[in-house]
Length: 384
Image (cartoon, rainbow, N blue to C red; front, side, top):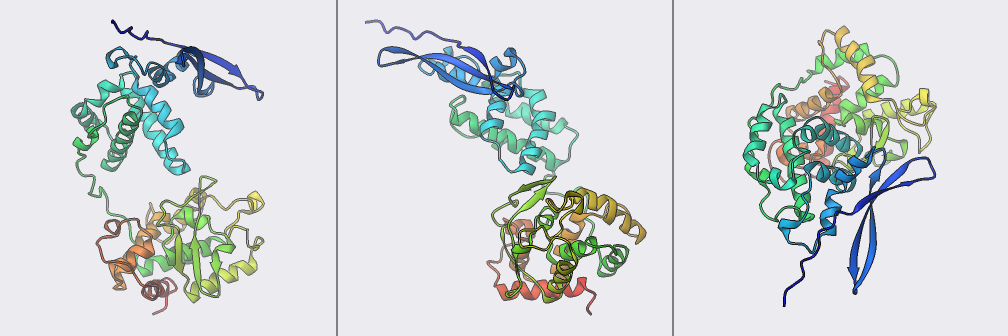
C-alpha cells in the first residue's frame, strides 16, 4: 500500500488591528486533528517589527517549517537566518536592558547585514567563512568575541527549533585572536591623584558619589541604583541589589553582583551626612536622586561623568579619559596593594569568576573582606 505524501503548505499571513491603533501579524495554517482539518494561528510580531506583508512572510519562516513538521526534511521550506534572528530577539534574547541593548547593536550592525538572507542550514555549515568574516571586521577582539557568542546562541536556538541538526555548535570551531589580551592598559589612579581629583569635585552629591564609588568599587549603574533602604547602619553593610542603566531600573549584572558588602564607619559617616542634607531621604528614595526629575530617578551616569568627573580630572592634571570605570579599576588595584588575598578581592569586586579577578583561592571570610575594604577606605579618605 502506497503511503500518501503529505502536501507541503505555505500558509498565509493576516493583519489584525488593535485597539491602540497598532496591528499584529498572524501566521495561519491547517492541521489535521483526529481526521479533521483545523485552522491554526500564531502571532508573528507587530507592525512595528514587520512594517509590511513581505517582511511578515519572512518572519513566518520558522512557523511555516513547523506547520510542515510531517513532511520529509528535504521538502520542508527553508528558514532564513534573518527569520531565526527575529524569533530569537522576541523569545530568547536576555531581558536585562543593557545586555539586550548591546546584543541588538551587534545584530543590527553586523550579523543581520551579513547573514540574514541566507538559509540557516547554509550558515550553520560555514564555520570557516564565519571565522574569516569575523577577522575582517574592524572591531576590537572583545567585540568580535561578543558577536561569536551571539552566533553560538543563535545556532543553539536553531537546534532547539529543529531547524539544524542537534550536535556540536560550529562556533566552537571558531577562535578569536587576542581576545584575552588588553589593547590598552586601564588607567589606575594613585592615592595622590585621587585626592587631587576629589579637591576639584567640591559640589554635592557628586563628591559623595565619587567617595562612595571609590570606597566600594561599584559599577556606576549599581552606585546610581542605591536606595536608602539598602543600608544596614547597625551592621554597617550595604546590599547591592539593582542597577540603573540609561534611566531604566534593571537587575545587577550577575547573581554574584547581588550581595552584601562591608560599609566602613568612615564611609558610613559621609553617607549619613549626605542623608541629613539631601531633599530625598526616605527609605524608598534614591541615594543620589536627581532634583531635575523630582527625585523619581537618580542622576544619569553619563551626564555626571561628562560634566563633573572628566572636567575635574582635567583641572587636576590627570588628563582625558578618567571616568567611572577608572574608579573600579583603581579600587581593584588598591585592594591588591593592601595585600588582600585574591579570594577576598574576588568577593569585594563581586566577580562571577575568580579568573576575572586573577586566580582561585576559595571563599573569603567576612572579617577578611571588611579588613581589606577598610584599608582601601583609609587610602581614599587620605588616612596615613
